Length: 386
Image (tube, rainbow, N blue to C red; front, top):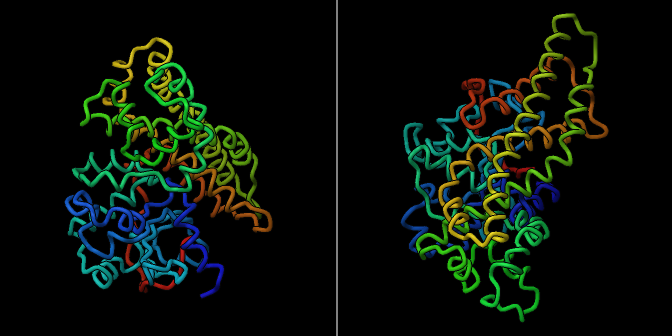
């Protein structure tokens, strides 16, 4: 295995995106001895519950693993040495060729088993961020321990400056003398606690500020973090989506086009552009409800309203996660596929790519995708996610 691919897995552990990575290896390492982890595991299979699960952009040589054409798949990575991720790992894809046989070989699972059902649920999602993930699983009767729904270390680090700006008014105007303003960088300290979900004095103070019972404030902080995450995500998307939307409008495939194909591509361009605009506008409106509730807290001094909003608002996470995850998928894949040096797609590939984008934008977690039928070969191969 080449050094470049070996390094990728260790790098993924610390810098992976929450939307792309569900790091069960890290969850086990940090929480594997806790009663919570033992009582409500995400997967019952010991190996599967310590895997790294990734939304992976398929490379050209990986497309043959699927009968139906798709551009992103759910990749399960099993570290060769759990104590040394630089040793690499074995991987398989959910729904790849001879998937039932591979499930049985690696985990002793059948398609009708609960762990296999949960893998199928993850495969339907456009993203794996913890807020979308928790609400989608709950909607399908799956309850898992809270330790499975933390932000990745990479996103927590990237969000710090944004969250500092968001919570500064609360530290200045709402926490008042109760928060120890004599400590160095109180805003940064509170940001770190929120993003890491540590249960310490600072978060307990938030519970008192929001007038939450102890049983409520963990849920309240989780939901608050969810809105901060989606606001941060939308701010990043808005900065890039206009450029990608314009590229979708103007890209031309190589080779000659007949009138029917050209008309089909033009229809898809319009649909993708309109749905991107609709998704951004709908996400902005949903996040505006959070902004109004937060402003009532820090300006109007009404903590009960913010508390009640947080505790009844998780239902928004599924819609926010689906919409923003779909847009991020388009931006990420577009930059990957059209990076400098890559050949221009032909009409067939571009039509398939546009169809994938339309499905992602049109249906989110419930969208139907091409049936993935068995094809000739499937064994886990050594390798690492991008």
